[in-house]
Image (cartoon, rainbow, N blue to C red; front, side, top):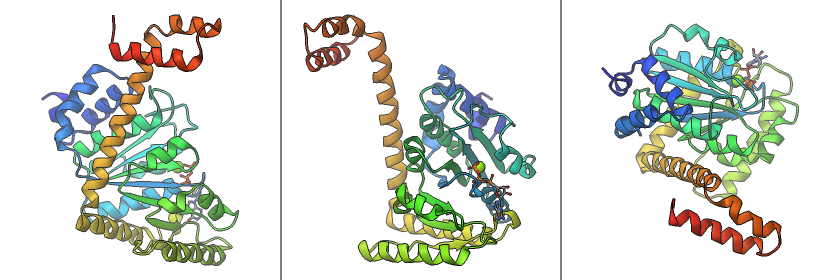
Length: 312
Ligand SMILES: Nc1nc2c(ncn2[C@@H]2O[C@H](COP(=O)(O)OP(=O)(O)OP(=O)(O)O)[C@@H](O)[C@H]2O)c(=O)[nH]1
Ligand SMILES: [Mg+2]
C-alpha cells in the first residue's frame, strides 16, 4: 500500500510522513493530499487557546482520556510558536500526554517554528487535513493565545475553547486579545487556586454582557476544571459535543469546514504570489524607484503586471 492508502486506513507512520512531507513542501506531500482530500471535512476540529502555562496541555491530556473512555479517537496538534523544535519528543506537551503514546486511537504531535516553511499557520492547516483524512473523530489544536498567527490557527476550529486561570488578570488579557469574542466554551482551569470565585464572577458578568449585546447569540458555557487532577474533563467533552451538535443542526459544521478550506487556499495562494514576486524581475523594477525615476506605486503595479503575464 502507498502512503495515501495507508493514511486513509489510519496508519500513524503514514500520517506522520505525510505531515513531514507537507512541512518540507515535498511534492510527495502534495500528491498524498490530492488523493486524500475527498476524505476530509468529517472531524470535529477543536481549538484550545489561552495564556502560557494556563494548563492547556494538561487539560488536553485529560480530554484525551475522556474521549477514549467513550471509545472515540483523537488527534492533537500542540503548536508552540516559541519553540524552534518540531515533531520531536523535546516539548513538554509530548511528555505531558505521553501516557497515551501506545494507544493507537491517539495521535499527538508538537509543532514549533522550525521546519514549517511558509509559516506555522499553514503547517497547522495542512496537518489538520491529514489528521482529518486519517479518520480521527476529534482533532484538537492547542495554541498559546497571543499573536496574529495563533489567531489564524484558532480560526480553523469548529469549536474554540478559551482557557483562563484565576488571578493575574489573565481574564482581562483574554478579553484584550479579542479571544472572548471567538470563544465557544470558556474554561477556568486551576480552579483549585485562590481567586477562582472572583474570576468566575468576572467572566460570568462579561458573558452576560456579551449575550445582551448580541441577541440570538448562543449561550457560552463557563466551566471549572482542575486539569492536574482530571476534574472537569467529562464536562468539557460534553460541552464540545453539545456545540458540535448545535453546529450540525444548523449546517454551520459544514459551513465552518468550508470556510477553513477557503482560508487555507487563500493562505497558500498568498504564499505562492510572494514566492513568485521574489523570482520575477523585481530587482530590475526596483532600480528605477531607488534612482527616483519612477514612483513606488507605478513600479509596484508594473511588478504585479509582470507577475500576471507569467514567466517569460
Ligand atoms: N494547581 C494546578 N496546576 C495545574 C492545573 N493544570 C495544570 N497545572 C500545572 O500548570 C503547569 C502548566 O501546565 P501546562 O499544561 O503545561 O500549561 P500550558 O497552558 O499547556 O502551557 P504552555 O503550552 O507552555 O503555554 C504544569 O505544571 C501543570 O501541572 C490545575 O488545574 N491546577
Ligand atoms: Mg502546552
